[in-house]
Structures are given as structure tokens and as C-alpha cells.
Image 1: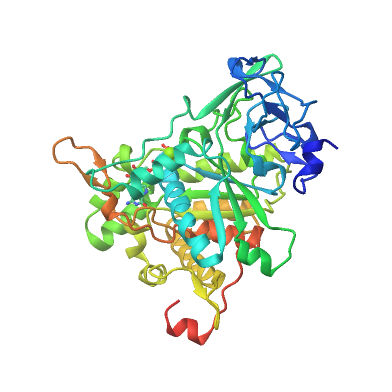
Image 2: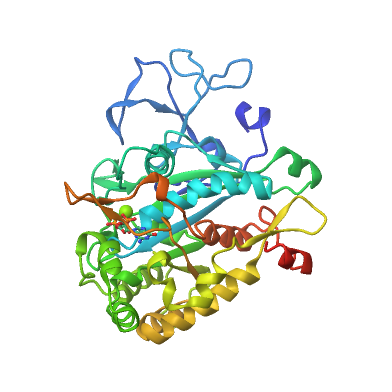
Amino acid sequence: MTKYQSNRRRLLKEVVCPHCWSSFRPEDVLWISEDLSLVGDDRLGESERVRFLPTEYDEYGTPLDARGTPCRDMACPRCHLKIPAPALDSPPVFMSIVGAPACGKSYYLASSTWSLRRVLPSKFQVTFTDADPGMNHRIRHFESLQYEDGGRGLVRIDKTEEQGDLYDAVRIGEQTVVLPQPFVFLAAKSNARAAEDDSKNYSRMICLYDNAGESYLPSNDLSTSPVTRHLAQSKCVFFLFDPTQDAQFRREYVRRYDDATVFDSSSSTTGKGTAIRQEAVFGETARRIRSLRHMTTNERFEDLLIVIVSKADVWSRLAPGLARLIEKNPFSHKSGSDDYGLRSDKIEAASRETRELLARLTPEFISAVENFAKDVVFIPVSATGVAPSVDAETNASGFRVEDMKPVWATAPMLYALRRLAPDLVPAGRVSKEAERYGD
Ligand SMILES: Nc1nc2c(ncn2[C@@H]2O[C@H](COP(=O)(O)OP(=O)(O)OP(=O)(O)O)[C@@H](O)[C@H]2O)c(=O)[nH]1
Ligand SMILES: [Mg+2]
């Protein structure tokens, strides 16, 4: 046991790297030198700081680099990329965000993390923070761009690219492997709640991945670019189904309301829907999961599959009962207490209504999903609450920060946490009182 281990906190037996998903013992973690003269790494390149296994420590047990400078940052022994400190003591929960190009993945992610930063501490006494601010800078940028700094006219989150600065290139053996940058959050009980219950499960490290939709198309899964292989680890797969890209949804909308302009503006770059069939994207995702997890053809996925039916502001008119249900938050006060709990019953009721609509309009998608997974929940979400506007001069589309009103953006993650980390998100009590006050 190293000094680091004995001096600090209770470490996990096994750490999983959020970049390359290899597992290692905490005592094998590498440290990143602090002294600016110590540069050069065989996996990351000449300009990267030196990675090393420490042998010298200061009086506080902090590892010292070859120049005697105390070090703060750790790295994975396999890929050498930086590991956030909570990775060593908070059990990880991996979650993948999957779907066709332009289905709304990046908007959903930004609205969800932006909303969770508020809802988890204020309602559930759980802090939701960046496990490493540097690693989450892109999502922070999206959150402030789209939800915080108003008064700048129309703004938009750019399409996620398949290459560039969202990925890290690492030399592993003879190959250069391209890995997606994860977003890593720490969800931890607030001090008050942790003091009340002495459960060992005080916190979780939540690792989320947002790929370009194109990375889920067949033939885009290479061993040198394993950018979607988080699917092997994920305890929850969020698959976004975008009704504005579905011909049947469009037809039904035109039949009922005689106008599909809102569908056109919300399916973004592709105008009148895409040529990509979403059940084919789901089929390819299922194929990858089967192959990565060595599942037989008939075996069913046993982890949680949440189908997020995105852009609900556009299509929820097709199901008025559902539209009313999602006007209220899916959490409620527990009677006689200031604490809140999650109303899974409301989410499951919304799931049944959403499934019914999908089964009527896209039976092929429902059948693909339900043949693959045992446990599927359908959750309607609107990341924006409104359709995009178009700038009259530039013809570019975007959203005004002032207009943004996410609907049920926290529901998928709260539901997943309730199932995967129930000590963090308690159940809301269904009481007459709660119903009366509309909680
Ligand atoms: N009406 C409406 N439109 C949305 C919503 N979320 C996203 N959009 C629109 O859909 C477009 C695509 O959303 P993105 O989040 O960039 O889609 P993506 O799935 O990340 O796409 P890729 O990065 O290409 O894979 C956006 O430019 C918005 O115009 C929503 O909640 N409601
Ligand atoms: Mg994107």
C-alpha cells in the first residue's frame, strides 16, 4: 500500500479509466509531473508532461516528481490520459448517449446537466459537480451558451464532429488509437444527508459520452477509432429517437394539423427529415453492444435502456394526455418533509403513453428495441421547450437563451440514478397531499 493510499480516503478495489475503459488497481495509477521541465510521454507525445509511478512523497503523502515538485494530477496506466481524482474512490456509472445525426443528443446533454446542477442539490440534497473542470469544459461552454448568457440573439450548439479536439489520440502498442473525451461528474450526498445516513455509498462518478450521430452508422466502428466502445461499459444507454426525422410522425402531424413547418425547422440541417432510418441506427447500436459484450443472438440486454423521445415541444400535441403529464416535474415533496423524491410512477405512466404513440406510428422501431432489451423505458424530453427560430438576415437557425424552457430534461438521468444508485435519488411518496399541491 502506498503512502497515498494509507493517508487518504477509502479507495475502490478496481478503477475503470473513463477514456480507454481499462481497469487497474488504484495503487497502479500514474502521476503527472508538475515541474514544467519534465515533458515527453511515449503514448501522448513530446509536449505532454511526464507520467510516472511515484517513489518519493512529501510529509502529507503527496507524490513528488523527479524534480521534487508535489503533484496533483493522476493518469491511467494504459492510455496515460488524465484520471479525475474521484475515479479512485467513487464507484463509476457509465452512461452512453446514442442516436442518429441531429436527433438532439448534444442539446439534451447540455439541458440535462444544466438542469441537474440545480435540481439535484435543491431538491435531493445531492451535489452534482464537475469531477474535473478541465474535462467538462465543452459541456460547460454549451450550458452557458444555450442556457445562461442571454441577450446575444440567436445562438446554437454546433454539430458534434467525428474528429478534432473532442478526441484524444494515444499511441498504444503499434497503433494510434482515437478515444472520445468523456464528460465526468461527481454526484454526492450533501453533507447534511451524508450525516443522516451512514451508507458507504456516499458518491458516484458519472461518465457520459456524446458522439457524432455518424459514429453510430454501420462501418464506422474501427479498432483504431473505438469512439463508441463506452457501450461495453454502460449501465444505462440513452437512445434518442427524434420524431421530427420520422416520416410516419410527420405524416400524422400533417394529417391532424395540416402543417409540418415546425417539423422541418426542428430536424435541423437535413430539412425534411433524413434518409437515415432510426431503427437502423438502433440496430447497429444493438449489434455493437452484442459484439462488445459477447452476447449471443438471442440473449437480451439486461442493463437499462432509456429511449428518450426528443423534441417533445414539437410532437407532444399528438398525445394531449402526455403533454399534460409532462407539464409538471416528475418529483414531489415527501409528506411532512422538505426533501423530494422521484415519482417513478409518473415517469412510467409517461413511458406507457409514449410507447403507445410510437407503437402506432413506428412499430418497426418498437419491435427492434423490445426484441433487444428486457428493460425499456420511453421518456419524452424537450431540451429547449421551443422550436428554433431563423435569423431573417443570415437565415441561420438557433435559439434565444430567454426562450429556453427545458421540459423533463432531468427525468431520464434521475430515473437512471433511481434505478442504479437508489441511495442518491430516493422515491417520492405518492400522497393525496402531493397530488393536491400538484407536485
Ligand atoms: N424543437 C426542438 N428542436 C431541437 C431540440 N433539441 C435540438 N433541436 C434541434 O435539433 C438540432 C440538432 O440537435 P443536436 O443536439 O445538435 O443533435 P445531435 O444529435 O447532437 O447531432 P450530431 O452532433 O450531428 O450527432 C439542433 O440544431 C436544434 O435545432 C428540442 O428540444 N426541440
Ligand atoms: Mg451533437
